[in-house]
Image (cartoon, rainbow, N blue to C red; front, side):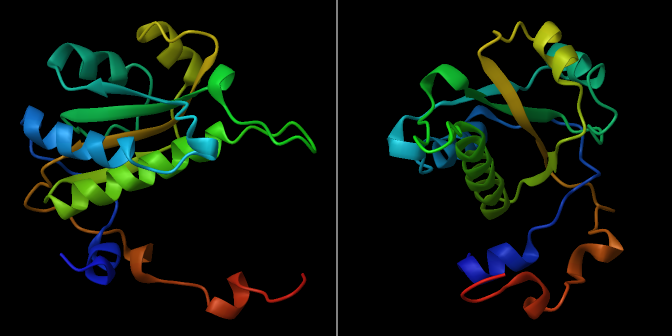
Length: 172
């Protein structure tokens, strides 16, 4: 698929068919995240793949925004492995995890897989349910699956503010 078409056609899928994704598809999506750029290429991302009935049941206890997806990936960052900006100590790893998630979301779309980026989850519940270490922070939940027959973008999906509202040149 051409990139322009890919980014315009991708939308947040909120209705999925029930079958789990095959491992080959999961591997393709993970590979896209694996090659994503990270600060100094430190690769602080950690991706938890949830693709069993048991793990999805646990996920449902951590968020109401699972949309019935049969598969999910919780993208985290390891604070201890992050590049740190010397001026203020800001970590690149949360941004790195977001870039990884974006790559995986676009790879899913390119392979006919629907996804929805979810931030509405309880990090403490995720940490407990999936034994996530303290130095690893959940950033984004990517719910995935084959879109249901009646899946469609929300009405606001194709409504954009004017470009002049979101882009400035030289100074704010």
